[in-house]
Image (cartoon, rainbow, N blue to C red; front, side, top):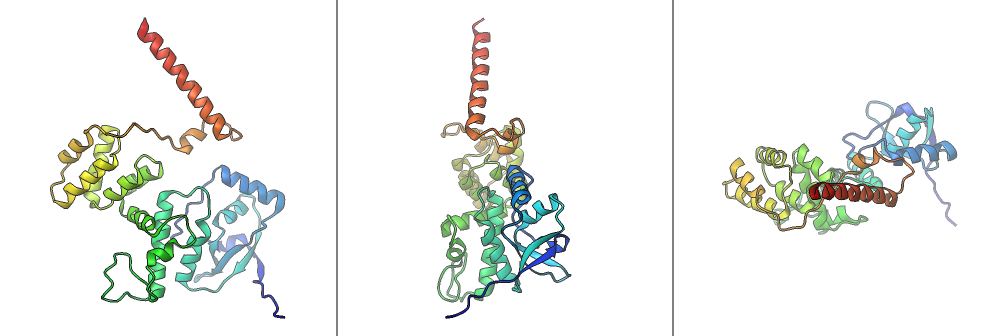
Length: 289
């Protein structure tokens, strides 16, 4: 009978734990963090941090950035840590995989996480052959690297490619994607523009107070490919009437600031609808006078 080998858990000083370099996932102080802090306060840190020795001393966090932040908020001196001696590319893959199971992940977080994992997989696999003309690349055993990135996720290899395209967006456009003001497919079309052209699109978005539809973004992309895109062309396209129904999306951060933390999603929706109905009724009463 073989003896089961378990990884050793060490108790390390929290101030020795350093964030992973270029960590693609944001550590937000939000309701989820409040719940995590409360859970650790009541039950302790049940799941240990995973880290590796840092080149400058201390330890680099592989998995557990949010848990470490919660420990800092609680002013805990030590935390349970499993220390792994792993190379950079293996560390990147573990960092990404350990965070993709979170509930609320922004498109920008997924984009840079998938890009990091893809590059790590390709480095571990080696350079593709000259016969490999695939944009994403193929590893040494003939499996596409984007398919390896998509393993153990809810996204297909094609969707992984779309997310990675978002890393080519300028920050204001990427923020709009995160805030669901620009559709994913439209954002992918805009990602093929140069940064100067994207800035021109952003100027028109600000001026027109509207984001391009998928059809408009595709048209903008096509004009760019033909070398015919200009601010005037962008403005003309953006002023075209959208064939899709109007869709209004308000980010959670903008909504949550006005409601108690114990309000459910249903209670918030009910309150918002009641206020809109009240506004609608008053507006029509004033028109009838």
